[in-house]
Image (cartoon, helix red, strand yellow):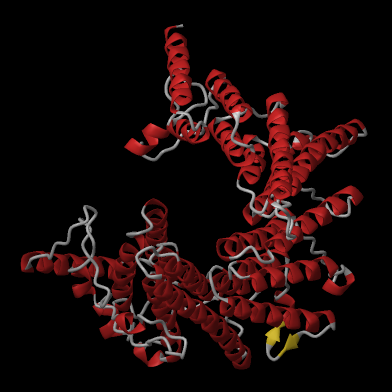
Length: 639
């Protein structure tokens, strides 16, 4: 049967008229979403649902009266057949429906929830015709699959509202038992998975709505914030329903106590909203609640304010999510708070955490280091004040990691990304000391690579574990790549304040001091370039020569020696083999084609030629350099 379009306002008239499905609207709180009213009128109306369901081709078609009559007749025949089926065959039909919904979810997540809701309406309508039989067509597992379809549909706020309405429909059925008179009728009752799926749906909606490109930043922040608040409200509602079930003392009701996994959904909702400290503070409040529950567990208490504390325990994922929440604020205070949480995480003892050790990994350090580095980047755009201090904080975290790796206190060691973040922080600062500090980090990276290789070899010889054998080449993975050498070279080329003393000097003395300072910075760039030429793990590329020619222009005095150095670099550039770059799946544009190195031109492209023109003030010298380049390219192409 062709797939039809589904209305947002309607789903299952059979359910609405027969059992009140859709009548139990979700409670509206102060945290209700900005577009809540748009979805608050959703009713489960099957006839109107079919008039707006999206077709597989993307077009909408409204069925004619004859089609509706034929479908109604087919539905009646299906009901009659279901009424005559024995319980085993009814159960088999329910299992087939669940399998079909699972297949829709895996094949087409966007369309799956609409088709799943239509299947649910059909099963429920057939089940209502079997009042004398136990409920075997629509079970909690079946409804949970529909909830899963909405959760993974990437529909944002709308999908979360649709999932929540199904959850409250199940709650309404359990509360209003007068909807069906037969005592033997069994209702689908929400279980732990039902609540967890809806909370996850709101968590995903918060991330989706915040990152939507169609929204302005302010609107996206508001919608994402309201989705996260709704996610938190559902967590509290889940706990309330758990207390109700405890008070009812019905053995048949499944335990729906929120656990660490459910708390993580709420933390993810708050932690992935960027640009505001309010969301990070809400995430901190959730962690405080988890820690308080965990504290009562360590005291031997079974419950605290009705919550079973044994199911809630912060772990590494918990703290990592909170670190990301503070890092995403994009502020210096957020970076400081993230570092404070990291230090607290390292101070947690095994005894103080009820026998469970929580050790930070490389990702925890990287989150905090990137937060400080991003702060450097933002400060550099406006003012250089305190940018160098932030870069030093990044290096301090690197020192900390190296110290713990040397003591082997934790099973981690700085990797390439760790050193790369530290170098980028200094490069973004454009401080006077940035070139020297970035060079020092680069050579620390090389030394760490050599040291790690030796340690891995010793561990392997002494009969290390399978993990040691697997990581025997980890030292090589720390060795800097071409882009890391380029970072230091560009740091030298763009360094600000080189040669500034802050004291009054006469013109001749000031000029001499400036030239000497710039010469030292260029010596750093040249030293890094020579190390790259001698490296067995990397080789120069277009960006390398572009940075070196730019460094000549900005750091060397305008004389014949500079022109000779520029020409030397340019000749080496077009004589070097081009570095293969990873293939891009994006379509090649005219501008990107222009920036590619010409055939036979080595590591020279349009940017290098443009920088060459700026570095060679004499037009004659530039023309002569271009003629040499074109002649070399023609000969290289022929050979």
